[in-house]
Image 1 (cartoon, each protein chain N blue to C red):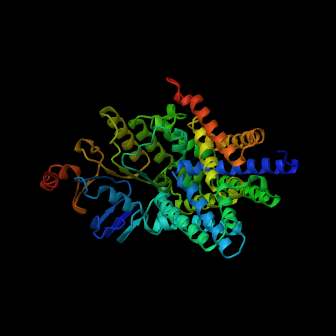
Image 2: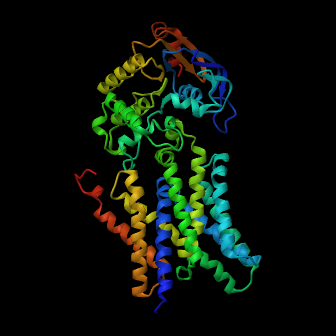
Image 3: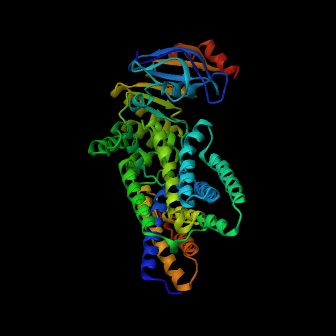
Length: 241
Length: 272
């Protein structure tokens, strides 16, 4: 298994009670998994736990390594998209800088981005159709454009795992469709493992293998979308929220 | 008042070097919202100088030591206490100020107190060759560190969390930024004083922000504007016979105001 969590409890700084409670799950190579649940269910926490950012107890293994001990190495192969990330208008960074930054961890310390890195960044920008924004300041873009630039940044990294936290949050209907297609193409073409937090059932991709349902930090369901979306567990999770 | 040419030359070189190092480090301070750093460090140095006077040791050595010590503990304390660096800076500011007053109260006499106060106001005309060498070494060290770890600093200045996500271990670089800020303040103290260092750290960078959306350009333009502030400040000081430190600070503000009025970012319909 590419990702394995066993009896995981995740704690935020200064909190006594864990946000994630006794989570056990495995995700294999090439799977596309959607994480759903009411607000405060622990969806973002789950992604950050897998990414090795948050302190947790239990076993968190990614690529067979402890995600907390080897976080910096592991993150070189994980593309994690933060929830609703925006930049102030006067942010003095250009789109090309932000996309290239995806490569920085892989380039390593004391080394400069080379031609391969620039090519990877450019290719990612082209794939996400933001290459025409290449020299624009990041703070001047619309929400949808920013979202696509941040996705390009992840792709430039050439990750093996994609962790996407509400990738459609700043997008209009047409952009959702476009970005969703891009994510699915990328997932299939590059044989990625994708874990995506979404709110809207309409955004569950056709190629989604599983939906993981969280509530109050607990995993309360894990099934194929056809089974999950029409289940009583799913209805109840949102009805009581 | 006519000054010996060697003194004028030392002043020009010293002020230019200080302007360049302050504006180089100022890019980090402005971008990462660490503007209280200048105040905090200058008061830490002030406390160090006061301690030096109280125990009959070189006030400038202790000023440097105190400011560097504060810069060293700042990052780890902020991280351990889960506080913003700015909050810790505010607390340190009040502590160092209180310590300075405490040490000064131990030392009787206004003459020694004025020595401590010179750390705050600076004395650019009294700059020595040793001071110039210190500033030059600092400038070269800053250039080397920024050159070697450019991409890490560049990423952290955009967003520490995004940088961490990219696979960069941000903690040592963040601490290094805080430490370099402290050292820059300490070494530049003698020149224009702790209170006016802030002007050379923030104003040239703020002026550079008016002309570019590109961080790389801002990093290049800021020291040039700092240099212009410094040289024009010295010229104004010699011409009008006013204190050099104040004159440099006033010129840096003037250049900032001119930059705001000329900024292409503020022209309607103009794309930068």
